[in-house]
Amino acid sequence: MFKTKSGRDITYYGQENAKYIKRICQEFECINTPDDLFEYLLEIWCKETSYPSCQDEYCYEEDPTLGQCAITAMLVYDIFGGTIHKIFLEGGGTHYFNKINDKYIDLTSDQFFGFGYVINYEPNEEVPIKYCCKSQNTAMRFNLLLEKLICSFRV
Image 1 (cartoon, rainbow, N blue to C red):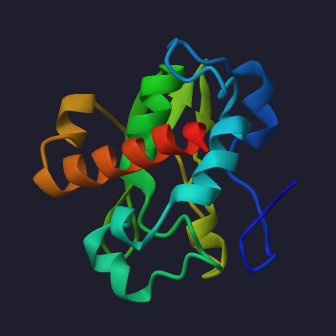
Image 2: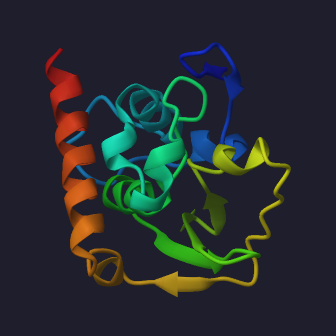
């Protein structure tokens, strides 16, 4: 259903539940479901919105979701509600995703598929939105993503 700029098929975890999830905010009238948001994100994710330690290996054309999890989970939360969750990855690091209507939605899960990494969504930790914004870098990247999303509506 979706493709990267290089033409590779791309999907996300929980996509089968997307049609049951509707936006709760009034600001983004063009985005009604996570599928709609994912389509926009495929156009606007970039190296600058990626987590700093991922930026050197970031390749927009092939793997646009790399390093985008925290800011994407924050955006999903703002548009669709639910909760933000995190898991600790084997070998270090954390990964963020959402739970809406008792279903997990992870718009950035594709970043792990190329490495054969299987994500176990449970057990996990619910994370308050304030925690996600605690890092100045994360807040800056989120604001950049939000600005790019808003600008994409004007095109």
